[in-house]
Image (cartoon, rainbow, N blue to C red):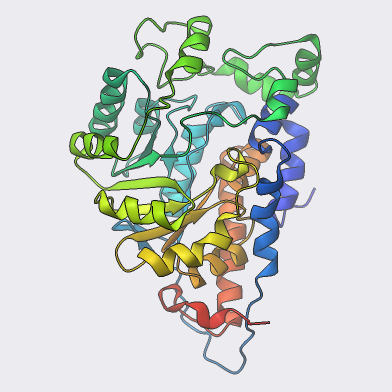
Length: 379
């Protein structure tokens, strides 16, 4: 079998190798999935200007994201249950990102713990924080991230309440998962995945079990997760988090100009224009459609990143042209992980790097830091 050449081909391979309940967890949006679909579709509407007879030699994709060097303007986004796409998934993805020279962001709802990632990496990684009602647990998470020498904290602002994802309900994906006869059969038809899971001890939420109060197993975790997301979370809480963290702070989930201005007022170092991959408010605009408005409003005051719908290097190029200092990819690296483990994550990054490099050159640019709206075709 030839190696996949596109993220779409990695997706097809992952679908064959990952049990349905976990593949669809990563590949679903909320309600009608209109926002999830718009995230991808709106990138396709953006056209690039082809330029010819320009010097295309000595090209560079190198940049910085929140002061950290990056081989290209891409970071691995925080994704929950990554370790259920492939055994020890977060550890494998973190190592692939480190070797590639881009940031890796660990989710609060990861299978591998903060300490697990620190044990297999040499460079600092980023940690994504969900704010729970138990502030002692939140403080403990922040302290653990500092002890692991995480170099940035990514505060997710758009998950005070969980958007309904129909596939998760149909598949019985909860904490703990409801393993029906159908689910067990689907797992049995994925022997490679099963063998990996049998060999690892990491099958639960590593940042929570053993750290949250009275949470010692998957059964006690179920009630805790349903009751802990803080619906009262507000802008006033950012100061509390910022003070206790003391390092670079990125606020994720900004999709409105007024919210972008509020994020600037907190003193955060960066924002991520995001609709949670279409997994929260269905019917919200795509991330890429809102990016130019937010960049125009606050881009001179705060570093602006974007996630949602990125499936190619051309998508990264378009986002950078519209003002993003960096991009975050979730599903593309999850497809690679599910398809081929660590090598699949590296392949996903190579696919994006090559597409980004060639497309930038064909638009007449040699350095990613010089890319701007000039390369966007006005139709």
